[in-house]
Length: 339
Ligand code: AHM
Ligand code: MG
Image 1 (cartoon, rainbow, N blue to C red):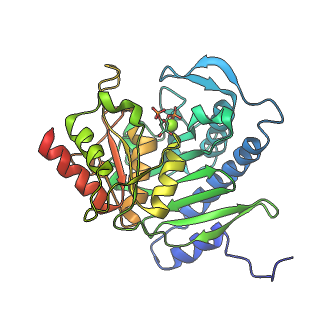
Image 2: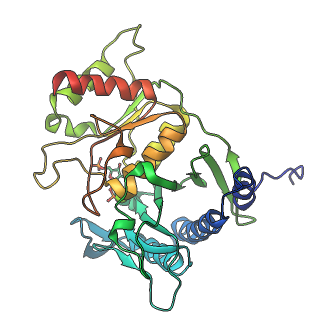
């Protein structure tokens, strides 16, 4: 039994925020409802994955050359099906699909574009560790009946909304429409996302760093010196920092948003085919950067704001450093001094 006090749900939250902006059309409410609907279906499947043998590899490789797992396929299909037919979008992009995804014939072409990573952290699916969905929404810029790649290839700064869903010990949706960053937790008993983390603010400095340190020999001097610095004993700078790395960007960024610190996936020289690191600009870095900045933090490529990068390729990768502003600025200073 509860005391009858129930948090406001996602729909009411967006509706109330939109009332503060009389020019808003209300369309974002519909968009976020469709995302929440798809997320609930994926969440249900993630929770029972071990029971129904949906885990495991399909044997296929995705366009990044990585093994595709069954849950990736499922999440990809659910999100594309729901979003492409929602009437809100003119074109879609997904990590799992090489080209832009058009709206199927017979369905309305809407005013927005959306880029998604339907199930991020795929290496963690088989081991019951948090995974997530990331989304980035832009207003349509092209004219004509159908949308095109230009509607997706816009700087992150121009996003009208972005967010992620983390499938963890509970399922949470964290999003921003440019008016604060807000977190909602799925109450499975009523099937609603209820506001649980209003107005998330990243502390200006954290105490943890999050990076795949096995790549140390492949990083630039600036990144290596920065990590060395974080591990030195120095009362004044608050070091040594603690290390936390899950290997699911959504989970690592979720912790960073709530607790502060810095998450990093730098460029490295491990694989000549990936000179800019591993993470993708459109549906991983730009939406996370949008959330970071709107929560009072920062997100950088090491030399400038991630949100100012104008995409040149759909599946472009960029170095990524995000979290507490003072930590990100310090990293930038190391890169400027050593690289
Ligand atoms: P994915 O989209 O194939 O799941 O890859 C992205 C993931 C991120 O969630 C995470 O930050 C990163 O890969 C971890 O990479 P690594 O195993 O190299 O540390
Ligand atoms: Mg991914």
